[in-house]
Length: 348
Ligand SMILES: Cc1cc2nc3c(=O)[nH]c(=O)nc-3n(C[C@H](O)[C@H](O)[C@H](O)COP(=O)(O)OP(=O)(O)OC[C@H]3O[C@@H](n4cnc5c(N)ncnc54)[C@H](O)[C@@H]3O)c2cc1C
Image (cartoon, rainbow, N blue to C red):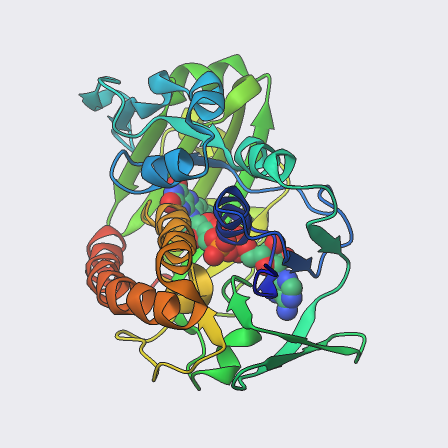
């Protein structure tokens, strides 16, 4: 029996999880189309903690739990808070249990990629648009070629092209800017960060630092700012005036600007046979530790629903669970971001 022809836009954590779970359930006509030219075209992001009730469930559904455990860092669950003036420890949550161990995003993506059947991912072929149809939907690629599929899954992230087939929504600037820095082999920064996450905050300005594998550190300076503000090192240090030098040391090196965007809440669409969404494409929200978990949970839920009910009913069953779940998290993270980086004062 031929299995449905399924296109997945995007080889991120969500798209790859979906492809893997579908293949485990006998769907052998699944192709992931990725805009980037190769798995190593871009440095993958920092570290991701997979939650026992979402990301870890998806890893189990993907049959990769043991492999993930071998890489997961339980000690990464440690959380520290330090005073912004003295850098003294003022709060400490030791790493306990295994609810949310950390793994580097690059390691997780590699694990998923290596689990797929050969040639599942077509690299360097982005999707420009999807046109829903019954029984076939049409994909137009960025090179202007076209192809027909029984289902197109938009797992193409924040600025999804597939989303445009279902909804007019576009991400809006949240008012919060992250400025990322990266550090290797720096004992002082490692000591201050501990084994997991360290934060310091003062009047709506935060410093958020995470230890990745290999003693690599990613730090994020977080503040309210204009959407187009790209502070120089000196301007950034002005925002952190009065902070302890061992904390402003995290702001050294190349500055990578990440203004945060989110889809309007609630983001919904009318169920349309032939096209669906998962992960950030469906529900981009502020990065408060759930986005990748939800993308993986969506992906596993969708694949399992298709395996159980077939493409048409499976997508409907999936959306009836995923959309309300996403709305709940989107509301939480919207409020969470307001609390974490209060609307006043606006720095610049
Ligand atoms: C600073 C920061 C820290 C975060 N930390 C965490 C965390 O600790 N825990 C957590 O759960 N979440 C975290 N998140 C959120 C998480 O990164 C996202 O929610 C998650 O990556 C979404 O996965 P995805 O597969 O939906 O999309 P993505 O990971 O964005 O993958 C989308 C893929 O689609 C490709 N693509 C894009 N357009 C096209 C196209 N037109 N055609 C084909 N391919 C295309 C992209 O190249 C990419 O490979 C964080 C986010 C940020 C910004």
